[in-house]
Length: 138
Image (cartoon, rainbow, N blue to C red; front, side):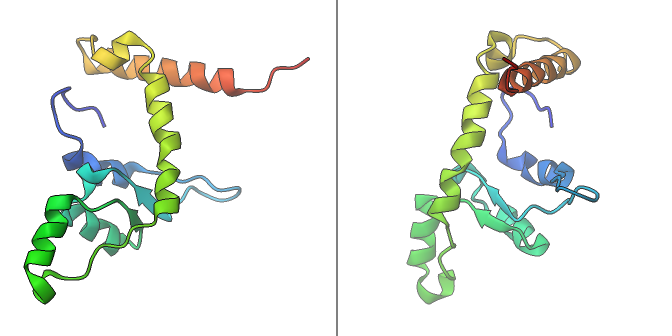
């Protein structure tokens, strides 16, 4: 999903999740992953409710202010959110990929004027990273 450079990421969570396709060894791609990992910016009640409705495990830490708000309400504040730190560590792989994409200055600083040319740069950079990851023949 392409948005303006100054737009926040969290409002795009649901549209991005709706477009996800998880490929398996056989059959058509699944549209529901087992889990979704994100940083604290995605820790909104709406995002968690969306994941719960779809049966997707949320691997998103709770913001400190949200935890304090919940604790302030006492037993009416609800249960603490579950968080799997081991699954959360795997999020590092996606973060490193994003940083590799941003090695290109045009992608990092969003210098392209049109969304089409920016998206083309993303596709080109992704293809280059994929080609470099292939094993070389001796």
